[in-house]
Image 1: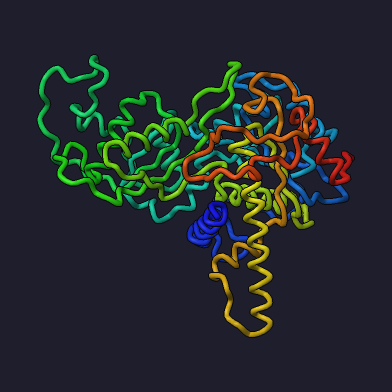
Image 2 (image 1 turned 45 degrees about the vertical axis):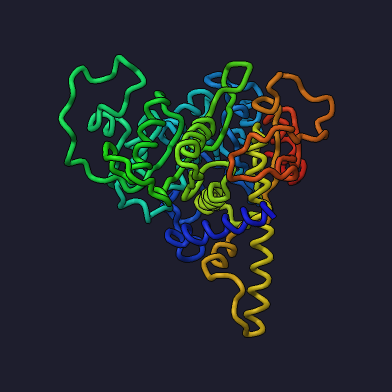
Length: 439
């Protein structure tokens, strides 16, 4: 029942946001990967046959461990490219990283792997936010680190307020670090425009400051520093990117992710108000919106490269059962549900009856890939002890659910379609299944 509700919510979110950008089949989700007519593009192999499948690769724990390259990653890239170093199948790098730019992440990958990675192939946790046009004209508080304000601007947000902007305008709010407390009582701020929404891009540096100021903004209905009379509820809309509780870097144990920060924020808000913190949308894996966005990027890549065969299969390769595997399986379940809606709608049209699904949902389903399979590798979060399981086909269900509060636990969704040692084995597996050989 919980998963059905989640699928309905995902379908509603896709129907609500995607048609804004993709009002017709095949419309553009953002800037196009190429402006030329379909044909061979730089960095892509010219083959007599076209691929009908694509890869969605996670980065941390699959290709990299922090700044260290996982050896299997370079072997996998060699299999994915021809003798001239050009990709022979469509590939997207889908990461929950959000405290960076797409160009920056592509450059980081290129330098680490020794292979030119285009920013067009990189999907960050916040990339789908460009679809949320309703929020682009609102005055938005952004939280995170790195070029967070520039990222927000690049995604279409026009009125941006940072945590530091709030802190400077209301210096009496940030009181945990005694060295940052004002030495003298500052004059009250009276000309600070009201904040209309919040976007959480990723884990910030000073959690105590961000937690305090975000709570202040929520409790004051966008007017931090105001007297607290009654708690507004529903509160201001919140968009959150990257729900990963943990992620894998160079250390042997997983590190805190943005999901841990969200857990703190939710707990504090609930403790102070007695009410649940609500999100307008959760973006990044395992969100269905992120996988739908990734599918469209893969299809744009195929169109740009002159690969004319229809996309029939996505393979999502990841190391985190609660993000990568859960998300891919949830998206596959969404695809199956959309296929049923399409068949029902087609029969209704033939019989001259009214469609059973909203038009925007049907429009989205028209361009959906039939299937998305999940592949779990043992080089990251799942293999936290560094040892390969004796039986790769044994259950991958964890006794403790590390997923976000709003994504209800379903054992079937954390069971990968395939479990392999590393990303190189994942590529070999897919090539065998697809009967694909390098030319």
